[in-house]
Image (cartoon, rainbow, N blue to C red; front, side, top):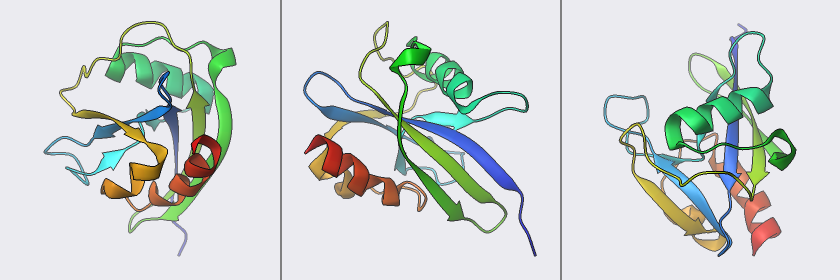
Length: 135
């Protein structure tokens, strides 16, 4: 039986100290308490890049230029009710100060420490690419 494909775009925001931003899923959401790369669902007619820029502005109050999005890897993971396809973009430049607009916890984490943060199953395979790139 085939499952619907859910397209989600995610960001590895990297600060000047080479740390990556993780956000914690708030109570009441699926997989609450797990840490993830910020981003969100791609709406019909939207590109992953446009969706990511929109989500980062809505969730973190930052503006990212289209040229600042660098695709580095992707996740492809089957959950119980859908199959997730998630491109991950590396972002080193943005305008504004990162702020948790949806009450989510934020953590700036070194690539070598990402494995210490419990994540949704689809996010875990992204760690080695980030570790190789930033370590």
